[in-house]
Amino acid sequence: MPLERVRILLGVCGGIAAYKAAELVRRLRDAGADVRVVMTENAMRFVGATTFQALSGNPVRSSLWDESAEAAMGHIELARWAEQILIAPASADFMARVVHGRANDLLSTLVLATAAPVSIAPAMNQQMWANTATQDNVSLLRNRGIRVIPPASGSQACGEVGEGRMPEAEALVSALADSCAPRVLDGIRVMVSAGPTYEDIDPVRFIGNRSSGRMGFAVAIAAAQAGAKVTLVSGPVSLPTPPGVERVNVRSARQMRDAVLRISVDSDIFISAAAVGDYRVQASSAIKLKKTGAPLVLELVQNPDILAEVAASQEPPFLVGFAAETNDVERYARDKLERKNLDMIAANQVGPELGFEGSENALLLLWQGGSEDLGRGDKKMLARTLIERVATRYRLKAEKGFKA
Ligand code: C5P
Image (cartoon, rainbow, N blue to C red; front, side, top):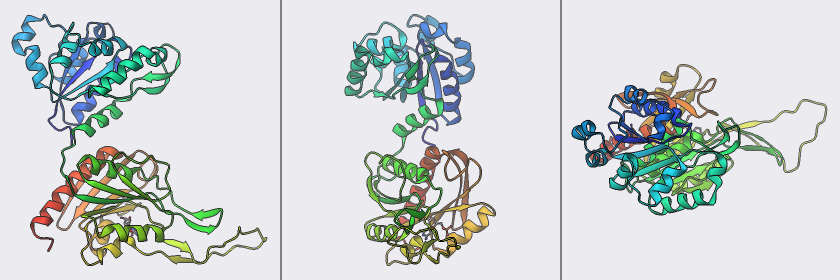
């Protein structure tokens, strides 16, 4: 877990979204982080310090002039203690103060005194957010290397609708984990396949599947964040290309096969997260098929097994497959691991709200002689853990000279 034992200083400013920071503390702790909370004076008008103290398990600080707190941990020590600073919610006033280098309360002083990366999640009324003064401050903060996590859109506590809501705790934890990812795949060339394949019936119809591509894209993002050089071979999905990732778009299984085999020779690791169509229409029609009143019979032929072909190649990369199953997950997955000659397989149960279309998944990792249940969680979080495990087993295999 990327946030395991990471020392996070959470700054809470005065705003109605301060109540969401309580959930954020819980999520950060669930992710393994060590959390200390610093509140501004105004934040305490919205939520009591006791709430944060109980949730973080640490005393809450708010004043520069609290002698007993300074005796336990001075503000400079606190600034040094933090490995990451997250301000959520950050008010418009707080950002303005940081822009001007003010140190007129504990939180602004800490931001000035720390060498740790600072992330800010602004939350405010949509007009205040849209105001040029606020937007100019955001640009200035970004130019100085402060990460500003943009607010979400929706209905606001003030009754207005627009951009200015603090993102949900889970999204903030995920954003923070991104910047903490250890570079376990530095310089390693990773190919990831993702999404469904479409097999044309005629120029307007196709056979596809329900894969959204989200798991594969999350794996590509996690690999890039771990320092890998990533090529993402994607079937038809509506997802943006992750930053720093080279994307190759394909449509059919055969197009995916050609791209994967071409890129595979220059890859150290291949993670096959695509839901490749097992069958295609033998002879797709060049013109649109018409209704005839009679039953339509389509002859389907089996598609090549891309992963098995890569495994059978001369010097295959380290191979990670996915196995989506509705039942007997472990048994089928272990069978695939062996039959397809893979180094690792990530098995998942597909069912309501799990697997294909949702944002959550549940993964069970299997390899020769071992297994680890990663449990259920957000696809981005699971992807990060998966990448860490892949890196470990890849290194073990590399040490053995790839003979295993
Ligand atoms: O056999 P099954 O489709 O369940 O295997 C799943 C794994 O094999 C996935 O990693 C998938 O990307 C890969 N696969 C493939 N080519 C196919 C079918 C599956 O590469 N034609």
